[in-house]
Length: 251
Image (tube, rainbow, N blue to C red):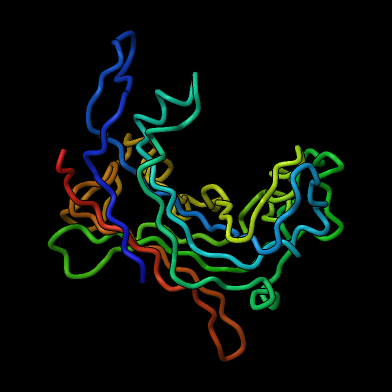
C-alpha cells in the first residue's frame, strides 16, 4: 500500500463569487478524483503517432489513481491558463500494476460514442474492462472507513487505447513507464459519481457519511481510500489500495 499525504491547507489563487477580486490563501474545496491510469510499455518515436488499433500493444497495464484537486483554485485558473496549482500538489497510485493480458477475461464493450469519433479514434474493437471501483473516506477519529462511491471502469467514455492514440496523434513521444490518467470515472447514478464536486453538487448538497458526519469537501484528518477489483470464476484480481491522508499544512 502506498501512502501519499496531501495538504488540505494547500494554497493558491481563488475567486470567491461575483465581482470580488481573486484572493490568495488555502483551498476550501479539496477533492479526490476516482481515476485509473495506463502505464506505458513500449513507447513511440517522436513524430510517429500510434494507431488506435495498435495502442493496446503500447500499454503495459493499469493502476488506480487519485488525481487530487483543489476545486476553488482550479476553477479560477483553468479559464485563462488551465489547471496548475489546483492540480500539481499530489497524485496517488496503487501499488500493483495489472497487465492488460490479466484483465482480458474481464473485457467488455465500451459505451456507444455519439457522435462518431474522427477516423483516427475509430477502433475496430472498442472495449473497456469490468473493474469494480470503490471510494471510502475515513475521518479523523473514526474506527472504520465509510463508502461514498461505487463505480466501474466500464463507464469510461473514451477508452484507454483512444486516449493513448489521441495523445500521440500530433507526434508526441511516449516512453516506457509514462502514466496516462483516465479522467474521473463516474457512473450514471448519484452514488457512482467519482468526486465530491459531483457527489455534493459543488458543496450545495452535503454528503452524509454517518449520522453525525457530513462533507462538502475533504477536511484535515480525512483518509481517502480507493480500491478496485475484477472477479472471475473462483478468483479475484485486485490493485491494492490507493490511499492518501490529509494533514495540516506547515505553511
